[in-house]
Length: 424
Ligand code: IMP
Image (tube, rainbow, N blue to C red; front, side):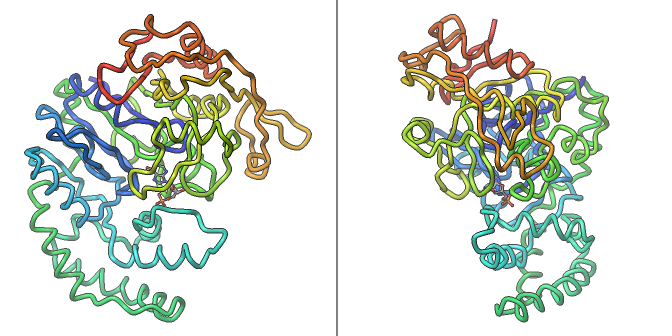
């Protein structure tokens, strides 16, 4: 049974949690494949709203096994806190499976990110300050500690001593901070180790077996295509690979295991943190989208920057991820605009681009080329089928299919499952 990849097509926060919720009935495994607790989704758990950062939202369904794959960076303190919160709400977390190959976020990653972001001043990336970048940097430098290291205390201590020596020199000599003590870290992490042990497994084998047994597996990305380390708006990106190819590398599955790639696209665009955003609207329209769409970061609470739909980004995401379909979210937020703008290309220098420009400076200078389509006044939140949508809203969806070159197969008009309309 082939797997499905779920990927954001913009700068994250496209509503991927909503799609997981919608398809959960048909899934047996939901796998988080990259990032760490920089992500966040709000879920309804035990009758109350709950913010999850690391654990896939599949955990809410007793028939689903949730997996944290090799390519994720794990802050064990945060993970255990999330598990405790879920358990306190009566949600069983015993089915959570964690890869032993996943890297650990360590206290010095958090400390270093704080000081380096400050050091960058007005060039700061605007990260979530959860230690994600420093943890991935250590992974690439081959000085990271992994979940499996927790189960060999001697090795853990050895690796920690080596790395801490260097980190403490940087913290004290470069940034004038206090050094961190190995003892305290070992004590804390050995405590985490004990609690996490029943969950640690060879997740690529677990998934391979699951697919062989005909189980339905969904690989869920965090962040989005434009935050991809290689293909996003570097350097204003995250330090991992949210694109569909990253899902395979991170989970340890081969390309033949996947036959469906769902791109989650918001009916407008948002971004948190620094970096270029051609269709950003800092005036009344953007404000209105932010208010109606409740656009505040789940992890940091920061106000998200808002702007009009950008077909160039969707075409780029369709190409990079090999999207087979698009799930369009938050269409209801656009009600009440007399005209809706859609960016179909950019102007940069003397050139016009209908595809993502090949040089970063061009993207920074890109001015959107808009077309205006009819808006709609009606509240869409009560719509229960595609036919219930006003004509202009349906035309907008069909237009997005045409502009992106990938069929929009579902449209979301609110947070609940019933507010998901399947395209005819
Ligand atoms: P980092 O992932 O914390 O290193 O942050 C790098 C960039 O990615 C910053 O601009 C963050 O705001 C952005 N970012 C990270 N995670 C998310 C997310 O889940 N949604 C939206 N933006 C994110």
